[in-house]
Amino acid sequence: MRRTMTEQELLANFDDAIRLGHIFITYQPKINHSTGRMVGAEALMRWSHPENGMQYPSDFIPVLEKNDLIYRADLAVFENVCKFQRKCLDSGISTVPISVNMSRYDIYRKNYVEEIEKLRVQYDIPVKYLHVEVTETSAIGGMELVSGVLKQLHEYGYIVEMDDFGSGYSSLNVLKDLAVDVIKLDMRFLSGNIGGRGGTIISAIVQMAKWLGTPVIAEGVETMEQADYMKSIGCKYIQGYLYSKPVVEEEFMKKLQQLEHEPMTPALDLIKTMDAGKFWDPSSMETLIFNNFVGGAVIFSYQNGRAEILRVNKKYVREIGMNMLEQDIIDSDPLQGMDEHNRRIYFDTLDRAIASNDEETCETWRTVCSKTCGEDRICVRSFIRVIGKTDNQYLFYAMVQNITAEKTRFHDLYESERRFRFASEQANVYAWEVDIGTKDMRPCFRCMRDLNVPPVVHDYPEPLIENGLFPPDYAEMYRTWMNKLESGEVDNLDGIIPLTVGRIPFHVRYSLERDENGKPLKAYGSATLVVDDKKEEES
Ligand code: C2E
Ligand code: CA
Ligand code: CA
Image 1 (cartoon, rainbow, N blue to C red):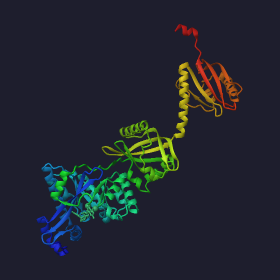
Image 2 (image 1 turned 135 degrees about the vertical axis):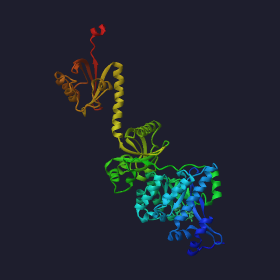
Image 3 (image 1 turned 90 degrees about the vertical axis):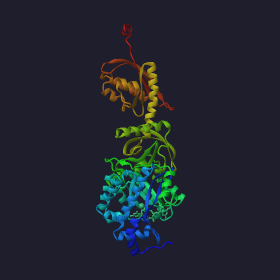
Image 4 (image 1 turned 180 degrees about the vertical axis):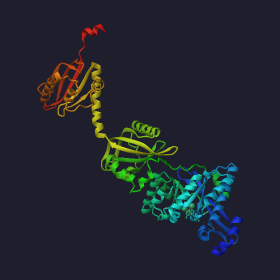
């Protein structure tokens, strides 16, 4: 029979309960819902009184806290977890990290962290097997105190999990300001309906956690629907009745042996120069810069060939989003529209950015599809740098420019250049074309290489007269040629012109292209070296 004990009874029995082991632990596994493997467990305190039966934490923990006894109970739990881990290690049973709850009253005790550390050393447990859960409400007593305790725990190497995140006090700010390694999000704090406001809050938290590189565990998960939903928004770690109720030691030992284990993905170690966390603070300089000053920018994580967009700014949406909604972009697979070739270019650039730890650039084509604009192919120039990393997961920051228009022009140029190049190499000539309307001259590859002509010469031929490619005494004659072509007076021109300061004689020819109305469109020029026959024979 079970009877809830009164405060007096609890206090009177407390010493015995500790000494005789009436206060003991149950263990609840934490599972990766994607793989079914165990990533850890939480130690939960129970009190089984010989006559009054099981007492639950909600009945006795507040009493212990009120009477300044909780630290003794918590240290007893910690010691028992150490004993358990020792047993596993000694008998060769592969174990997982087990987290122990730290009451907010423990935080007020000066030596608490030292005391648990003493126990850990005494039982010689590697620190990775012991996590500490600190509840979010601890921050009520003042951030400095909690920060100090977290710092101390971190110095000893403990992983700290933020318990009951979302229970109310905290806001995203607490998360930002406290250096926790894992976030525990309690499903029960979210009013039932996953699709509604609760869902929006959860996904905002999960997204922010991703951004901070902090793994999230969903607690109190009772249904497959909840677990699947959490997984769908990027939270795959689950603790709850769906997988297992808290179980006694022997049973947990069996689960340890039955289930495979895996480590929780460690938090990203954000590079100091770019404090990613600050992007979440709407008033931070980083956010201001991200949104207003940097042009199109995106933040994405990358692991084993998979990229996931975490954040884009408004200019990114404008630049390459083609009227898509920000959320649609975040949900989309950023590599989807890239073919094999472009993907390889992109991945190579990511690898380069990882290796150099500096900004790397690439230009890639991708097909984008939006509800408003349909499908289109665009070329994006990306400036990419790493802002966070772990062993195999990276966080990248990329600035993007949509250079499709520029690229299309260049592409045309490249195409015509290829024709020129082909022609000139066959015939050993230099070739170029002049757009009659714009007076833009586009040279062939050999002109660019041998004569140092830029890809486009505006206001042709003036710049080339100025730089001496056309000697001054031939300038007027050459201008007259251009006028004749422009006016359509002639269809062909040819003559010998000495070029460059060396006055090397070239046979220059022009032929004019006209549109359907006979209006001059383009003039195609070529120059062939005038070979001195005698010299040719000598050599
Ligand atoms: P908590 O740290 O948030 O622990 C999770 C609570 O949720 C546990 O309740 C667990 O049994 C329960 N739970 C787990 N999965 C589900 C589920 O799917 N559905 C529902 N409805 N509940 C689920 P428990 O063991 O009663 O502990 C209650 C609280 O008491 C804990 O909340 C924790 O704040 C505190 N507590 C437990 N053990 C300790 C301890 O050793 N030291 C301290 N200081 N506090 C402890
Ligand atoms: Ca807990
Ligand atoms: Ca909790």
